[in-house]
Length: 130
Length: 130
DNA sequence: TCAATAATAGTAACTATTCCTGAAAATGTA
DNA sequence: TACATTTTCAGGAATAGTTACTATTATTGA
Image (tube, rainbow over all chains, first blue to last red; front, side, top):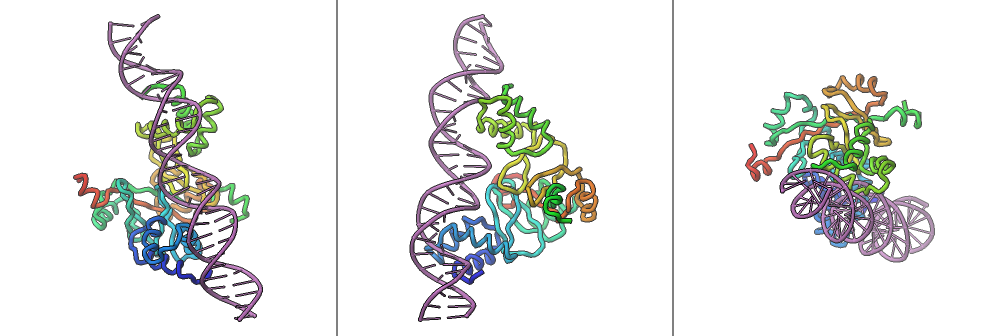
């Protein structure tokens, strides 16, 4: 992975933006510093940076992919009305935590979604992974 | 909401398919019974049926939207390799449940994702919702 | 410095979904 | 049943987000 001006600026903008921007939103920011950059470059670099573990690609519902400059362990809260995403401290995953989450974020908490991630039996067989 | 042949077949196929198909996948199935149906009709009906609470639109990550004929309370487990989605019994959201989930589904559990859903402070202000 | 290779800008292509239009089907009323 | 009203339909165009392609440019190692 080479060190390019584009990559540097993309990472810098993502990290300092404490929100969880989409590629397009980040593109807008970066373009102010590098007017000739293309959207494809932003996508490619976000992909590379998350593959390297330098940033995090968020696995949230919604039509747009989002990225997070903070790779520390934490969960998210998403507004079902405007789609914005805020951070939660790690481990806040209990039913009675809803009130704490509401208090901490100012959100009206409607619910939470738990999705386990793993390798399904048929994929395990295919790749021989334990 | 009127009762049409198309709507009936779409619902019937979704409910009997115990997987969590995308609109496109369902379209393929339905087309075998109604060869002249269009993809737009499938999308429109899935939208209407979930608005009426008859089916459930899944809020999962991934590029395709998925639907579930089972509206009962349950969570899901998704394979990070092939993207397939299976059901979990409701309430299985504790760290030490990972082993139980693995045992129950045959998956290798890599982790779980908790996302709270709510209304953010700025949207609460706008709509006057408590 | 210079060759090898990775990254870039710009654009075309692609995928999933939504929107639009005129025609057809379902329903309510008589 | 006949007819008017309204919903839904098929088909296709349009859109949004993302990825792929290509010729050029920049970075790196020797």
